[in-house]
Length: 195
Image (cartoon, rainbow, N blue to C red):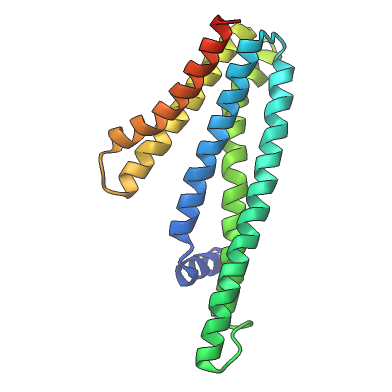
């Protein structure tokens, strides 16, 4: 409990919650979009082996997760270090070991974790039909449309969430996110037809 209280306190002091929401939505959307591209691309290429999709998806998930963590962590660390240095100069004291300094370091780590986990998690969710297909629950021909539907649903729900936090029309925001996924799907299907 003490650990969770400390985390809550650091989140409040560092004001990292809004940044975390942005990172989560932006990168979860990237994860869903990327897997949608892999799945539709595999369908357009006529791939009939779910392991190709699984390993491609896992490779991309790992790369997005590590890239997201490292990029967000280093960016936040640099920004927060700059702010902390400015605050130290104005107050004429060192704040590195203060609660502000600790909250600042925590915020960088927290932002990195959120940025890294969100695309990988979304990608894994969208790959679930292929894991099930590889264990004989259903065919790859069913896994493909199910995965596409999951990716598009994820995009729509992320848009709805954006609408909710901005106090705007949730369905409209959901539809905007969904539209991007539908464009990707349409492009690959046109490519498949013109082969």
